[in-house]
Image 1: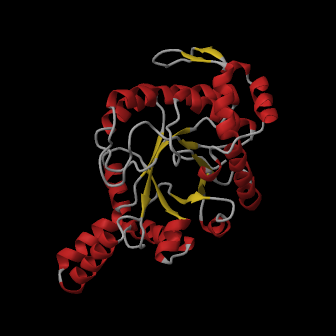
Image 2 (image 1 turned 90 degrees about the vertical axis):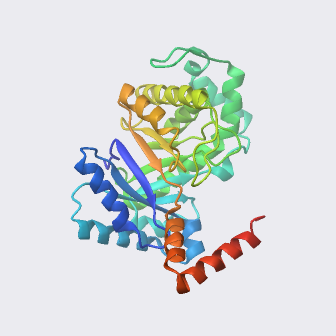
Length: 321
């Protein structure tokens, strides 16, 4: 089985010019004794915006790996794919971020909801999981509400997962399930119920991206209650450890933090939690490398500055969008 390493970091390279510089940063980490695996990610939406193809991400990463003689593992993430967009990513990706945002909130049938609750009596009542800051108390009604909201999304994740497995072979790819593009964060008890549903659906996910409390805007630090984030992040780690044992999910299952770059106030909290538990982590950057490219163009003057001004003017005129 292809397994994602304990510490991995997703990097975006919108225009295909930064892979070597990005990989150099991982080399610098390795020289300091810190092993973090690079994962180049780009979504179908981003390819559409810039007119690129998924193969270009693999090609740019492979060139950087060859040029820098990188000997460690690396991956290419088909980011935020759906059933109708995944196929062109299959030949050149080994990591797939399954996006089910469109299905979250579509109500599952009463019969399916009741069947799940009957299969999982362990999810109702007092949940005293090792590592929790305090026990959970969930009622049958709580479980039913979560299942009703997320079951169809989980079933859609199962369809996409099986579609990829049919094309690449079971165990030949890394699956992440993204639950972060929704209106409300998932609490640790909700995350546990979602993981139980994914296990029932036989989705062998290695990372899951919940929506955390607070705001994760691109290119800026976290906005929110740090104490609450620390408590919920710690509880999420406890939930994942329990779900791995209880539902026989992959042993390397870990959290994925989307738009995780520039969240400097969170990094000490996350580091302490990982050091305490030995858990892994995937951080996916906000894909703002192209802004650094734009700064470089502006600083260069001449045609570069003219282009930067045109982009800025267009952005100002369309900010309402």
